Amino acid sequence: QVQLQESGPGLVKPSETLSLTCTVSGGSISSYYWSWIRQPAGKGLEWIGRIYTSGSTNYNPSLKSRVTMSVDTSKNQFSLKLSSVTAADTAVYYCARAPGSLYWFDPWGQGTLVTVSS
Amino acid sequence: EIVLTQSPGTLSLSPGERATLSCRASQSVSSSYLAWYQQKPGQAPRLLIYGASSRATGIPDRFSGSGSGTDFTLTISRLEPEDFAVYYCQQYGSSPSSFGGGTKVEIK
Image (cartoon, each protein chain N blue to C red):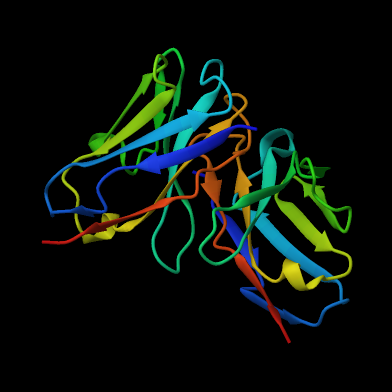
């Protein structure tokens, strides 16, 4: 079955850019919507945004000015960049798949902790 | 943005008991585009219910979802030891998609 795996630096300095990649295995990345979701320690879930395999994107307005997503279908990967990070961006970041534009998330990656600290 | 409010924040129950979790939306969720997830410590959320009442693949039938409009419910008919976890609702009918704050189901 399809599996997702997040990768990237676990520590980012304040004001710098957080960069993460999600690798999709066990299936094609094509024809699905791919999202990033984050969860600060002990808190709830926040949808960051999504990208379709064509490259079209939708971002949460609360983060839109700082978020960029991209997709590389040849590598079965998609990526997240979040600029000008602060301690408030410290969270576990998940990637997840949605079957369409108005759909639930399934499956999810295991998540990766990103800490913003100098 | 649609705000989802889950209640109670914590539910203390014993194995075998029935759990009823509520998710209330600040405005109507179109076409019952509401999902429920289970999350255990150190794990990613797992999809339980989509479309307000459809069970995801492999989910036991003790889990059921109901509701429409602004009021939704997740019911666990008889709690098993592995069901003690945090549960989140999510609406995906309008952008941005949003999640509730979660209900923790703990062992009494």
